[in-house]
Length: 113
Length: 113
Image 1: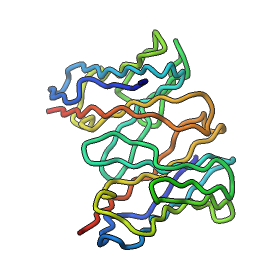
Image 2 (image 1 turned 120 degrees about the vertical axis):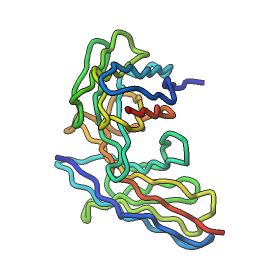
Image 3 (image 1 turned 180 degrees about the vertical axis):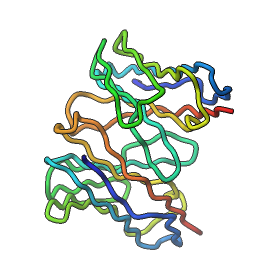
């Protein structure tokens, strides 16, 4: 069965360190997204990609970057982790268009001390 | 920009009670509307969707009707179970906004036996 997986599921790091969260999907979807989930804010879009070599900023992109070198993977990098980036991060993918669902990974819980 | 507003929780109900979670949206075009559910410790999964006005989405006893005149997509279930305890997110997606999924803040539902 096709799936979307995130790693690591849990990560504790220190302020100022670089952190990369991996996202891998086997749906062969062109669209991929990264969201963060915080109490009271729902899910907010960080970055997204419509295909290989395409990346776009979402509403809360400061301090984050992504790259898309193949269809399956969209890693999220925190260049210099800050305590404000403590959150649960979700990766998702979808087919083209706006009527279909997004398929979500199980999330990566990041704590920045 | 596009936005989704849903009722604040937590909502606490007894088993077999009737559930309504209100959701209204603001959008410039004609979005698709979704309800996602997140069970404890898990990622989000699609509960139901509607892609045009007057459509009714339904799944697992839940239903919601796309009301363009009131810009609403309220979630209902006639008889909730303890296993329905979760966080429910209303969301929209439309081509004018790059096909991104825009979420409400989420509503926690607790069902007591």
